[in-house]
Length: 85
Image (cartoon, rainbow, N blue to C red; front, side, top):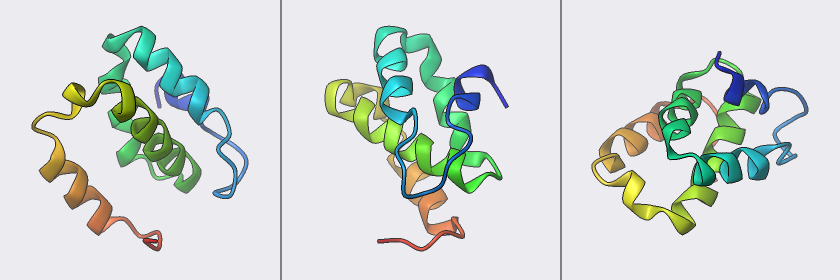
């Protein structure tokens, strides 16, 4: 697990944890974006949830980062073991 994702560890799925902070870091340094995407493949449910929250925040200001990723994101969400809301 990379250092960026380490910030998303701990807590539970009801908390945003450091997701907003991580999103801010990615927005300030776009080279971190691939590291954040790696979080969607983590085994830890909290890290995956925090990753999803961070990605949603990033998408509000930098939607172009998601060009070409829609199929991947949909597939990963459909295959995730957590309930979908």
